Amino acid sequence: MTIYIPTPLRAFAAGKDAVEVNAATIAAALDELTQAYPDLRKHLFTNEGKTRAFVNIYLNDEDVRYLPAKEATQVSAGDTLSIIPSIAGGRQTR
Amino acid sequence: MSELRLSRTVYDALRAHGEETYPHECCGALLGRSTPDGWWIEASIRAGNTRTDSAHNRYEISPGELVKIERESRRLVLSIAGFYHSHPDHPAQWSQTDLAEAHWLGCSYVITAVANGKAAATNSFRLAGDTEENKRFEPETIEVRDSAI
Image 1 (cartoon, rainbow over the protein chains, first blue to last red):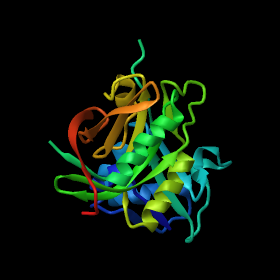
Image 2 (cartoon, chains in turn blue, brown; image 1 turned 30 degrees about the vertical axis):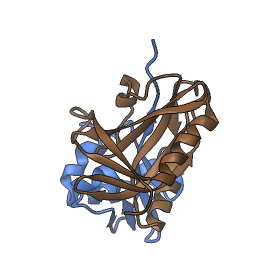
Image 3 (spheres, rainbow over the protein chains, first blue to last red; image 1 turned 90 degrees about the vertical axis):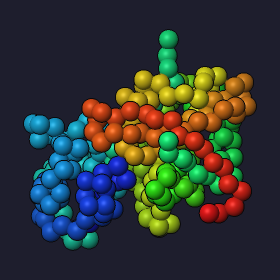
Image 4 (cartoon, helix red, strand yellow; image 1 turned 135 degrees about the vertical axis):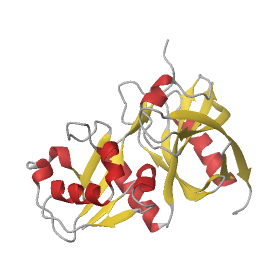
C-alpha cells in the first residue's frame, strides 16, 4: 500500500512524497514507515507512542481515529494512508 | 530571506477570497514547486473554514478536505506549498494562535489584512525550524509575476 508523505515531513523520508509498504494493518504500515525512516517517528508519535494530537491519519478518505478498529484496522494493497498535519490559526485576540 | 513567487492570478484570487468572506476569515491552500530560493506558487484552492463558531477571528481546514487537496496536488504534479488566510480588520501579521497551530514546516503562510471589506496588505511567512519545539515564522518577500516562470 501507499503512504502519502505531506510536504513538511518529506525531508525526513529522503525527500519522498510517497512510500510503499507491505503491511496487514494501519499500525504495521506506520511501523514499517518509521523503521525505514526513523527521523519521522518523533514527528508522528509522542514518547509514549501515541499519534501526536495535530497529526491526522486517513485510510483512503476515512479518519483512522473514527474507524472501529482504529490503527488495528486491516488494510489491503490498494489502500492508501495519508498523513495530514492540522492547519488552523487566527488573528490575535485581546 | 526566502521569497514566495506567485502568479498574478493566484495573488488576486486569495485576496478576493478574503473580501468575499469578510467579516469572517477565509482560508485555502497554495500549490506549487519548491526552488532553492523559496516556493513558486502555481495554483490555489479555496477551503472551507470549519470554525463556524468563531469565524471572525479563527480558521481551520478539515483534514478530510486536506486529503482531497493533496489528491488534487498530485494530479497537478505539484506540492502543497502553504496556506493562506485573512485577518478581518486586523494586521497581516502572524499571531501566537497562528504559530501554535502551524505544523507545516518549510511551508509558506500567507496572510491578508481585510479592512472594511477591502483587501489591504498581504504578507508571507515561512514556517522555519525542523521540530515543533523550534518552529518559528520568518518573513519572506512576495514577488507577483504576471506570467508563468
